[in-house]
Length: 99
Image (cartoon, rainbow, N blue to C red; front, side, top):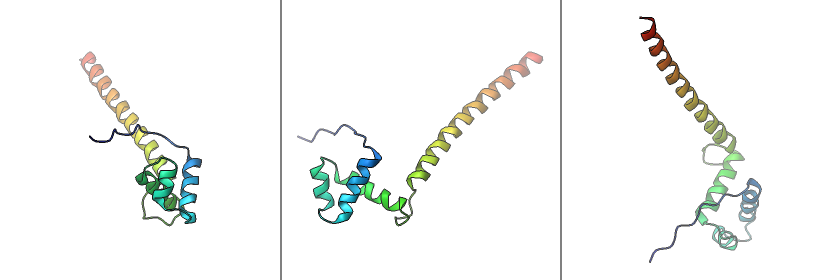
């Protein structure tokens, strides 16, 4: 039978930084660090890539600050779209009332 999917866990930025540092030291492979801390190799590799982006040496993806700003801007955009929709409905309502 297949493996049970793992429950999604969250980790602090400090923990991720420590794991990245362990991997970058070169004492152990990424796979070994992942096994030692009961993490997935994929997650550890992504943390390493993100740390490289944040340091300015990565693959050109978004830095953590840029990701946070993008998420904040998307939330604000969604809220503003909702506000516009409410104003459209109010305008239509008052246009009917004045006729």
